[in-house]
Length: 161
Image (cartoon, rainbow, N blue to C red; front, side, top):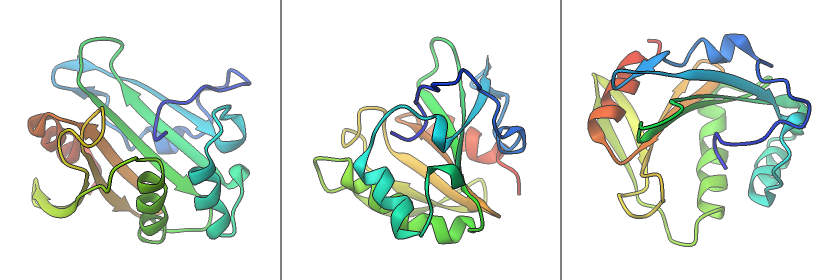
């Protein structure tokens, strides 16, 4: 739901400035960075659409960026942006959309990673790809999803200050 989506138009660089906030390497692997407009996402998600509706927004107001290795890296990095809103404004809806897509109550805690306060959503085993480490930044949310705390720390350390 969070980063892996399919673009119907084939456009994979809809928001280069959002892509640029994501690291180009992680764990020694080069990452592919892409972004898509919300209108290009073909995957339907009621929790996601409810998230936008509650904010008074539509898919056209949304962009997502992702950074991933083509093989062998147990982490996914992403960013969400909704026009006209700050990362802090997006956070409650992001948490609600994530929880609505889960079959179990997700744990939530604040952690200090690389000197920054990061929200961790989920415990190991609660989500297939691991906990999400989320950081509001200006007009977006930056996040990494992994079961590897070392990779989470490296990714957070590479997010802009």
